[in-house]
Image (cartoon, rainbow over all chains, first blue to last red):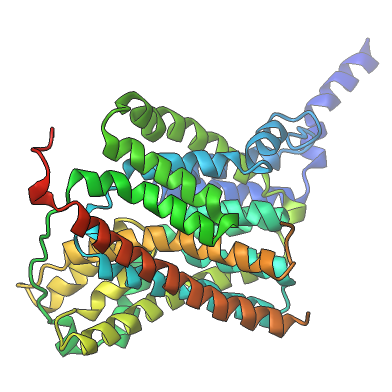
Length: 381
Length: 46
């Protein structure tokens, strides 16, 4: 009897005895993510489930990412198959209004410039020793687009998914802190004060409906490897603009997006096991992700300056910073910065155009990159 | 293929390709707007 009691009591302490310093540290990291999400409001929809997933997966002996673990089930079902990010994309498409972009289509070029950080970071990642596909996964943080980063990294570097996702979502939420100093450094006082005229050009409903169809067909044919990314965003947008499938649109932007966000967050957190996450490489990923978003902003601003020059000073280069995919946060940052230097400057709608261009741009950049990799034989066709 | 050939190829074609695709998309949007101008449309439901 005594022996049985002692054995039973010992069972209660097995987890404590088995807890490694790495697991304890990762539990603290999980708590840190929860703090950022709950207390600071940084991307709470993702950081709360990611943080909790990180805690769960580092509980000793619970084996939640083991063969029969429930986190393993979600990960295998939704992340390895790339289904979760694609379902999120349908929701994003259903939530996104491309009207500002359709009103002023030339601004879409800022959305291309805002993706250059991806490709420049690829070079940096290779320079610091990442192998080719790992470098691609790190570089895609520069898309400033969580689902795109998850889609690409789960496909080519699943062992880095946790670090890449945490970097992508953390830096997206830090855009209001990352961008303003770069905006001030790369623009002159005179440029920041430029007042852009009101560019209200009405767009017909037919154009809005045809836009997602045309983009899907054209962009997918040019970059077939990115067709799932482009197609899901544009399907969501078509449901929004057609106005005939309100129930589906509502499900895509609410129920489906919410359920998938929860499961995706948990699955990402589940990749943050101490043995995988606590490596020098993780710090490098976080550093390169930060640089990627800085480079996106810088190239967007420089492109904005070029457009300003070419248009005889009609374009405020600040809107170039909004050519990233963090929508609409980046556009708001541009508006706030513009107003600091000229109270009569209302850049929001122009910045929203660039920001919508950045949303499409990030998906197109990923699609182009995947197709280039396929063409070079780096990934299978 | 060595690392740097890979890196520069993906970077240059990637940046150029992204810019090209989005530029063509902007032209397609302009074309759509020309073909289906707002004033030729019946009143929208919402």
